[in-house]
Length: 124
Image (spheres, rainbow, N blue to C red):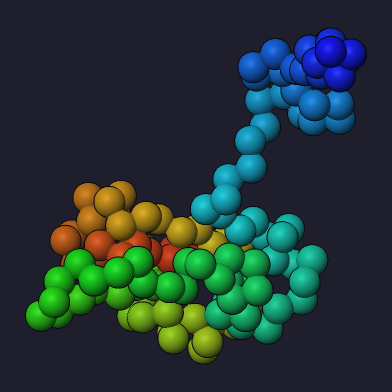
C-alpha cells in the first residue's frame, strides 16, 4: 500500500518534463547532424551511418518479388545509387545525413523508393 502511494506521488503527468530536459526539443532520430558526425571523426559517410544508425542500411522486407527495391542514397538531391555509394563519400564536406522512410521517399521521388532514402547534405 505504501509503495502504491509513493509511486502515485512521484508519477509525472503526461507531457511533463523530466528534470534537466529542455522544453519543446525532441530529438530527430532520422537525422545525423554535423555536430554528431564530427564528434566521432568518421572517414566516410558509410562508417557514420553504420556506427550511429545501422538500421538505415537494411532493407525492410520485399516490396516486389520480381524486382525488390533497395535503400537509395541521394547527395544534395542527386541520386547516387545504393548504400554502397556511401563508402566512397568522404565526411569532409558533409553537413547532415537524413533517413527518409519509404512512404515519404516514394511520394517525393517515385515508387522505386519504397525502402527509403539516405539523403546526404553537403556544403556547396
